[in-house]
Amino acid sequence: MILTADVGNTNITCGVYNDCCIVSKFRIPTNTNQDFVDDLKKNLGSLNISGAIIGSVVDEINDRLCCAIENVCRVKPIVLDYTSKMPITLNIENNSELGADRIANGVRGWNLYKKAFIVVDLGTAITFDIVNSKGEFIGGLIAPGIKTQLDSLGNATSKLPNIEFDYVEKVIANNTRDAILAGVVRGTASMIDGMLDKTIEEMKDNPVIIGTGGHCEIISKYMNKRFDFISPDFTLEGLKDLYYYNA
Image (cartoon, rainbow, N blue to C red; front, side, top):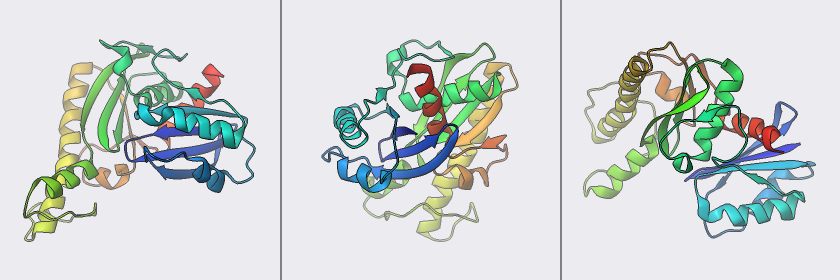
């Protein structure tokens, strides 16, 4: 079984794969002060892990997470970066700036479709990861995620409350909570709609559009342009693919 670890700014999302099938999935808070051993033991139990890969955007915890996986699983994990073997070409100005999660999304999309595609990943940040019909990762965009926006409003203002992500029925809200949700949730859906139009126009292609990330399914309900596919585990699937390219 293969352990995949997608290290984000809020959580480490882990998946255990038996061949191509995910058999276990769990999350660990991205805490830069913990050693992760107890969390892995609790969640992996008696699963027999024969290999592991880490895709991380939080470099300061990589060494401790690697040590924890070696301690618990008795395997040395692969740490994904822009020099790893992959079936796509990175065609951006500075490959070293590209996040491991975005590489994983690009690889998974290419393995599935072998044509132009856009992955819209709604996490702590919202990213568009774009691969053209030649299999070149040509870039994308980065914007604040839903929780990042909500936290920013609550922390940067004196009168606006901290609220949790939720559904919102109307754009015109008659109370503060719903006004924030309308601005952030419905506003994000409109941003994605608009940026997809602009992106497709610049690509001069007809890309497959994939949605992933924790807030993807709810946001998609408010969009005019719907995703062709929604896959909550898309990044983990990409890490799994990359493990086999680099094992």
